[in-house]
Image (cartoon, rainbow, N blue to C red; front, side, top):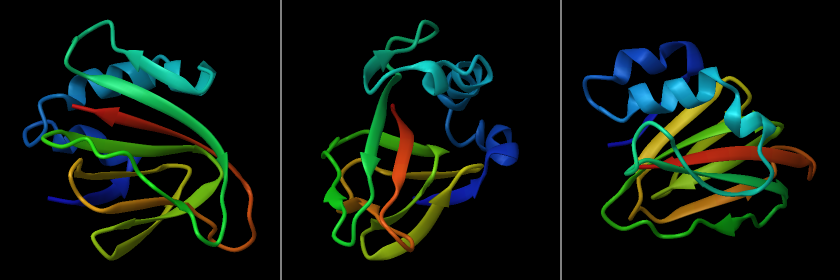
Length: 125
Protein backbone atom coordinates (compact mmCIF):
# COMPACT_ATOMS: atom_id res chain seq x y z
CA UNK A 1 0.00 0.00 0.00
CA UNK A 2 1.27 3.48 -0.88
CA UNK A 3 0.09 6.55 1.05
CA UNK A 4 0.80 10.20 0.15
CA UNK A 5 -0.48 12.85 2.56
CA UNK A 6 0.32 15.87 4.73
CA UNK A 7 2.08 15.74 8.09
CA UNK A 8 -1.04 17.07 9.83
CA UNK A 9 -2.81 13.81 8.86
CA UNK A 10 -0.14 11.36 10.13
CA UNK A 11 -2.04 10.47 13.29
CA UNK A 12 -5.03 9.28 11.25
CA UNK A 13 -2.88 6.38 9.95
CA UNK A 14 -2.11 4.98 13.44
CA UNK A 15 -4.60 2.13 13.06
CA UNK A 16 -3.09 0.96 9.78
CA UNK A 17 0.52 1.50 10.88
CA UNK A 18 1.14 0.87 14.62
CA UNK A 19 4.68 2.33 14.28
CA UNK A 20 3.08 5.73 13.55
CA UNK A 21 2.97 6.68 17.25
CA UNK A 22 6.74 6.21 17.54
CA UNK A 23 7.33 8.15 14.32
CA UNK A 24 5.13 11.04 15.47
CA UNK A 25 6.96 11.11 18.82
CA UNK A 26 10.36 11.34 17.08
CA UNK A 27 9.10 14.07 14.72
CA UNK A 28 7.50 16.05 17.58
CA UNK A 29 10.94 16.23 19.24
CA UNK A 30 12.51 17.39 15.92
CA UNK A 31 15.21 14.70 16.15
CA UNK A 32 15.59 14.19 12.36
CA UNK A 33 15.72 17.96 11.73
CA UNK A 34 18.68 18.31 14.07
CA UNK A 35 20.46 15.09 13.04
CA UNK A 36 23.31 14.82 10.56
CA UNK A 37 23.03 12.38 7.67
CA UNK A 38 23.11 8.83 9.01
CA UNK A 39 21.12 5.94 10.43
CA UNK A 40 19.47 6.13 13.86
CA UNK A 41 17.32 3.96 16.11
CA UNK A 42 14.33 5.30 17.98
CA UNK A 43 14.46 5.32 21.77
CA UNK A 44 10.82 4.21 22.03
CA UNK A 45 10.82 1.11 19.89
CA UNK A 46 13.84 -0.85 18.72
CA UNK A 47 12.19 -2.18 15.54
CA UNK A 48 11.69 1.35 14.12
CA UNK A 49 14.79 3.06 12.77
CA UNK A 50 15.28 6.16 10.69
CA UNK A 51 17.74 7.34 8.08
CA UNK A 52 18.48 11.01 7.52
CA UNK A 53 19.69 11.84 4.00
CA UNK A 54 21.09 15.08 2.60
CA UNK A 55 21.63 15.32 -1.15
CA UNK A 56 21.40 17.41 -4.29
CA UNK A 57 18.51 16.45 -6.52
CA UNK A 58 19.24 15.69 -10.16
CA UNK A 59 17.47 14.86 -13.39
CA UNK A 60 18.32 11.18 -12.92
CA UNK A 61 17.85 10.78 -9.17
CA UNK A 62 19.03 7.57 -7.52
CA UNK A 63 17.63 4.17 -6.57
CA UNK A 64 16.50 3.77 -3.01
CA UNK A 65 18.02 1.03 -0.88
CA UNK A 66 15.91 -2.14 -0.84
CA UNK A 67 14.38 -2.79 2.57
CA UNK A 68 12.63 -6.08 1.74
CA UNK A 69 9.87 -7.03 4.15
CA UNK A 70 9.71 -3.55 5.71
CA UNK A 71 7.62 -0.43 5.23
CA UNK A 72 9.18 2.99 4.56
CA UNK A 73 7.76 6.37 5.56
CA UNK A 74 9.65 9.24 3.92
CA UNK A 75 9.32 12.88 4.95
CA UNK A 76 10.83 15.93 3.24
CA UNK A 77 12.55 17.97 5.98
CA UNK A 78 14.04 20.64 3.69
CA UNK A 79 13.66 21.26 -0.02
CA UNK A 80 11.74 19.04 -2.39
CA UNK A 81 12.24 16.00 -4.57
CA UNK A 82 10.30 13.77 -6.91
CA UNK A 83 9.98 10.15 -5.77
CA UNK A 84 8.90 7.34 -8.09
CA UNK A 85 7.43 4.21 -6.47
CA UNK A 86 6.72 1.38 -8.92
CA UNK A 87 6.18 3.98 -11.66
CA UNK A 88 3.85 6.25 -9.65
CA UNK A 89 5.34 9.72 -9.23
CA UNK A 90 5.05 11.89 -6.10
CA UNK A 91 6.22 15.47 -5.49
CA UNK A 92 7.58 15.28 -1.95
CA UNK A 93 7.92 18.74 -0.43
CA UNK A 94 8.13 20.06 3.13
CA UNK A 95 4.96 19.18 5.03
CA UNK A 96 4.29 15.98 3.04
CA UNK A 97 5.01 12.31 3.68
CA UNK A 98 5.01 9.15 1.60
CA UNK A 99 4.58 5.57 2.81
CA UNK A 100 5.59 2.72 0.51
CA UNK A 101 6.67 -0.93 0.66
CA UNK A 102 10.40 -1.30 1.22
CA UNK A 103 10.60 -3.86 -1.58
CA UNK A 104 9.05 -1.50 -4.17
CA UNK A 105 11.23 -0.27 -7.02
CA UNK A 106 11.87 3.27 -5.81
CA UNK A 107 13.78 6.16 -7.33
CA UNK A 108 14.47 9.17 -5.12
CA UNK A 109 16.21 12.53 -5.41
CA UNK A 110 14.80 13.51 -8.79
CA UNK A 111 14.78 17.29 -9.26
CA UNK A 112 11.32 18.89 -9.40
CA UNK A 113 12.60 21.87 -11.38
CA UNK A 114 16.29 22.73 -11.00
CA UNK A 115 18.73 20.64 -8.98
CA UNK A 116 18.57 21.72 -5.34
CA UNK A 117 19.53 20.69 -1.81
CA UNK A 118 17.14 18.34 -0.01
CA UNK A 119 17.08 16.75 3.43
CA UNK A 120 14.77 13.83 4.07
CA UNK A 121 14.12 11.26 6.74
CA UNK A 122 13.04 7.69 6.02
CA UNK A 123 11.53 5.67 8.84
CA UNK A 124 11.87 1.94 8.30
CA UNK A 125 9.55 -0.38 10.24
